[in-house]
Length: 157
Image (cartoon, rainbow, N blue to C red):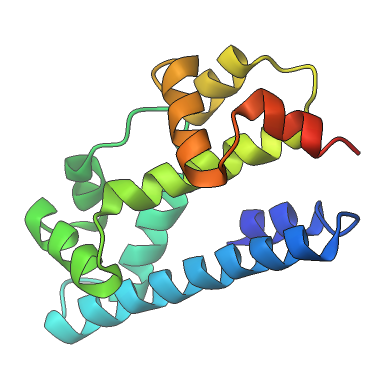
């Protein structure tokens, strides 16, 4: 969550519409995290606190974006079954956990595209866990409406 706040702070100098949309993304992320935690707390009391389990999962996702992240890995980290974790996320936020991971990867890619102009799209794809630059470009375009190179040109400081 702190990384997300730092991400928002980097866009303070941009126009109001861009900053507003980034704040909405952050607020939505917080809402989803709280919703998942509530579902886990309400459904069962497992060993350890549900909030701590969710925190472990979210921190692992944040730290491991450049790697392949499997549902089974996340469930093992939290000490719960993979199917249970998947249902809790889906019930809380109406889409699967992998969609949340994809959103985080795109947000990180967006930050790198605008803040690190010397990085190529291939390098950004590798740093954000996309299989290739074309996979990044497709996901990036679906989310932002622009290819990474065009997005970079539009948001030069």
